[in-house]
Length: 139
Length: 86
Image (cartoon, rainbow over all chains, first blue to last red; front, side):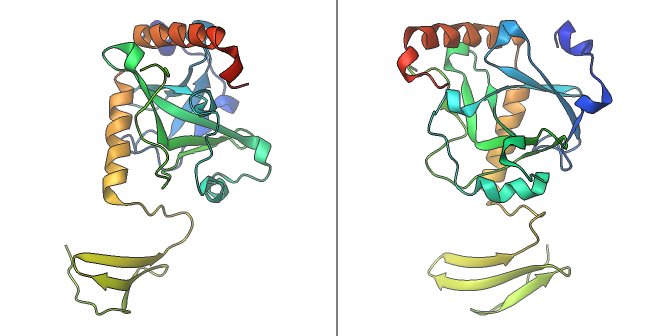
């Protein structure tokens, strides 16, 4: 893990609680979002519980501008969304051996209530999307 | 594992709040109706497992790989500004 993440500085107000963790990392409940210019447009979802974990994430609209997963609004209640503009929406990125073949998971988007700092990875039942969508269009 | 025999139209109740009903039978296919509180996610097992696997693969990343694709993505966005997302 790079030094940046080891020495990540954050305040209590930055911490986002994922009440059920995320699938595969159910024990990781606390995360912070980090943006670093050199990795843009990717951002980072950094777990601050043990074991240390971090994910590269991206706005799914950058991959599929028409991204509109079915039924996702039904999940907003779980993260206590009252105003639609409180929602942050991300896809988790998997970096492949050849980074240019890297993919984003459009079936398991991460939604975050940025005001109440609650997050969740939802699983959408929508056949238009896959867990491994190429990020670069010419792949 | 608890195994119960049910007929078409019959249900089982799990705890106070979850009901699983046999809605339809067709050869090797069983259609289930599930009532559960909103806080309980109901997913097909294989989809949940796929997400778990993908998350584990995603967590194994190297920052250098992210930088490579970030550069490539910024470049491709510059080359085709028309279909880039806002």
